[in-house]
Image (cartoon, rainbow, N blue to C red; front, side, top):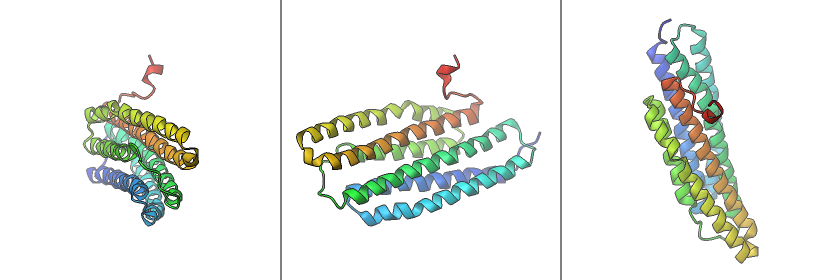
Length: 220
């Protein structure tokens, strides 16, 4: 078996990274549209979702072409399989960003509920971990991917804190319950994004080391 053409492999990497960059931007813009009460920015996120969907389809087509060559060594095959699995994860992350943008459009028409607790920090961390996971993919760096996996609990802890803060706000001010519930959904979307980033990093470990670490506790 021969290696796939390096130009084709690099094209696939670049495509995944381009899609990842669009998704990272969507997360950041969606959260800023809420914090800054900028509904036009939220609408921009929603309009940009078609771009993410198109990139996913293009990546799928490129993967099919590479697999059809039937000349790939195991490492190249793992990269293609990883790309096939990463792009739908990125698309789902983009969907969560769109849901945050929709929440922002609703909340921006309501009296502002301050503070936003740790939502800005949580969004920054989600973007940071996604960026690091994309860097790990670009460099086929399994150790960097493991480092991101180890940080997943940071987002979970922020979500737990926001959850309790918002419940406390609801109990003290029942009139704010609807808005607080929307903010809680935003936090949940960010928490799910963190879970998806972890999934991406588990795939990167597989790509580099041929080691499946997802559900590893079930394999013992």
